[in-house]
Amino acid sequence: VYMATTSETVILDVSRTEKKYIISKVSASNIKHVFSQVLRSDSHNTGDGYVVRSLYFDSYDDSDYYDKKDGYNYRKKIRIRIYSTDSKTAKLEKKEKVGNNQWKRSLTISKEDALRIIDGDFQPLLEYESKFAFEMYLHGENAYIGNGRIVDVPNAEKYEEMTNIEARKEIEKI
Image 1 (cartoon, rainbow, N blue to C red):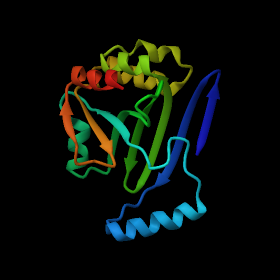
Image 2: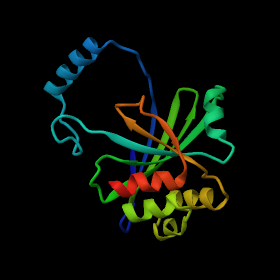
Image 3: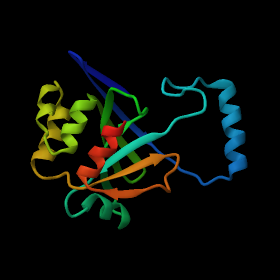
């Protein structure tokens, strides 16, 4: 994990290998209990967990989606993520994956800037002093970001496609 700070811009830069397993609800409950005895909750947890809301962006031809679906070795995701419905900030993130190795970069942005990005205005990213913010600006200006998909976790079955206008309305409710 690497954190770069320039003025007030903080970039989280993480390289990791991720393994996912399907387990039963009973096993999940047992593991959660064991972890609760030795690990502290993160700052977003108010006692009974929380919902992570992510708005995933893709190109107009959904190339990121099809790269994953078709099993390409290299694939990426770009998203805006919040951890609380009353948050004043959001995370702009890019995850890239090659085989089992992942690289995630995350930039904290204001809620107002997140809404402007959803509307297709990427200018606010030029105000952040980071190469990553500039990279995301270029993605947006080159018509990379098309329709988004909102995903609430842990209720991933509530997955629905939305246009940018619908996504903006959802975030404005927050």
